[in-house]
Length: 111
Image (tube, one colour):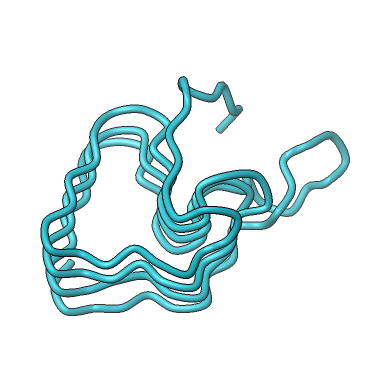
């Protein structure tokens, strides 16, 4: 993705029995396989349970991008690395809630 900003995505903010409003990961980008490269683009104002802006299970590379003002109900308001790698080169990751970046041992979420 080059020079594109994804705004106001909504992956749902619940992953529990009876919620039923999406799988709750990656409000702007949900990388569940393969790799994602973002150049001079970004994600803003999106929300999810994990990775309000971006959720990755594999490889994310961002160059000269912005991840701003995203919200996660649980963790990783800006970027949530569940597994794999995240490479940020001259990027801005700010203003997300509850935090800008998070990484945890892999979650086991039914897809």
